[in-house]
Each structure stands twice: as C-alpha cells, then as structure tokens.
Length: 191
Image (tube, rainbow, N blue to C red; front, side, top):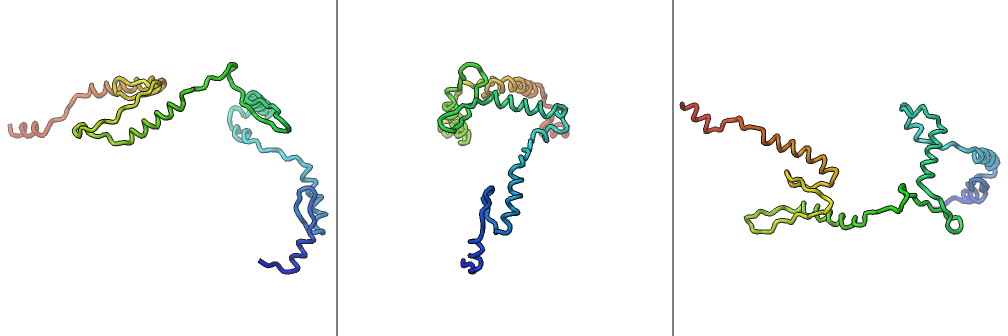
C-alpha cells in the first residue's frame, strides 16, 4: 500500500511523549504532556470485588479496614515470599499443617485403575451362552462393596449409600402383588 507524499511528511514530524511514549504532532504534544503528567500522578483506586459481593449481606456491617486486614492476613499466612538471585521473587505456598505434608503416593495407580474401570464399563457385557469371558471387575483397596447391591463406594459415600440401599431393599420386599393375571379374569367371567 502506497501512502501519498504528504502522509510521509506527517509521520516524520511526529514527536514522542516522554511519559507514555505515544507520538503526537508538535502542536498537540504540549497539551498532551500536561494531561499525561496529571493522569500519571493520580493513583487510581483498584476495584475491590469483595466489597461489591458483600453488599446486602451480614458481612456488610464490617468496616472496609477489617475486611482489608483479614484479606492481608490470609494471604500472608498462605504465602512466604523469599528472594532468589537478582530481583526474582518466588511464592511458595505454606503448608497448613505444621509438620511435613503427607501426599498420597499411590494417586497414579488409582488413576490408572479408574481409567481401566471406565473403559471396562463402556465395553458391552457378553452373554454367558456365547461362552465368552465376562469383563473382570476391577478391585480397588479403598472402595467398600455394598452387600445388598454389590456396588463399590469410597468410605463417606458408602456410609450414605448403605442407609438408602437398605430402605430400597425393604421397600421391594414389602410390596405385595395385588393385580390379577389375564387367566384369572377369564376364569372368573366364565363362572
């Protein structure tokens, strides 16, 4: 794209603002520098979304200073700042426990087992009449099996499930069959 010759002259005459490094014509640079200085000196307040979120709640009665202090304390507790080499700052999360943290060492084995379980559940179960092998159910050490429905759950879920499963099993047993079959109806009409 070719610019006209007067456009090239226009771009050559531009002067740069020392504050924001933008370029202006010589007539406008004087006005811009004054405005740019004043706007650079003014410190703008940062928008705090927590104050907006708490409006209309019980926490609104707290002063802004208390909220700000609590936020600072939380960040100070959760992070330690230390200086590495030259002007490098790294943040390290401080563990909430006082001793060394115990991470689960067998998470990868659990993940692999979970993926196998999902893949096996997606495969169709072949019938026993075809004499084809059924897909073996994978066993996991951390899961408990429900004696009623034979499903497996982790410990907290198992505690919740067992109550529901017992109720469902009791409901199934207590329902008597009330209806008549078609053969009973026909025999009653003939009589």
